[in-house]
Image (tube, rainbow, N blue to C red; front, top):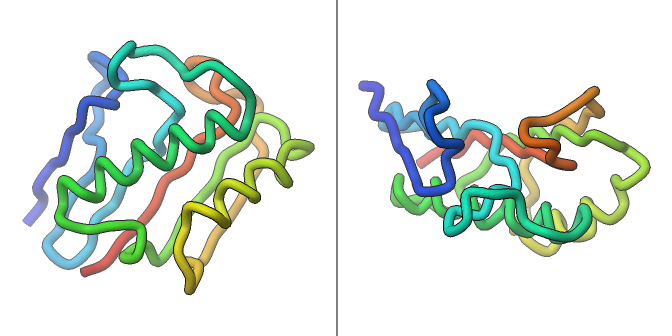
Length: 124
């Protein structure tokens, strides 16, 4: 079974699903700090962008009947690892313990000029 999950925070016209639910596992595509109401990146710096990314992750997980408590793996993509501390501060407040396994990498650029993108894998 492979059920697509789409939410209002999806980049318009992009050929991907926000998440795929396999029944036991939900794979959430990388979420950028896109405000579903405006269709644009949220204003502000890395903290504000990370908060919006978590709002988008929660929305996708909720559509699958899950929450951040179900996340077992996350991958954080950042355009500047010098901002890791500020991102990590928000991450630690948003992600419930026990924290999932995590990778964090710096990339040359992110969609729409975002500073951060996070993808997660959650289990039932």
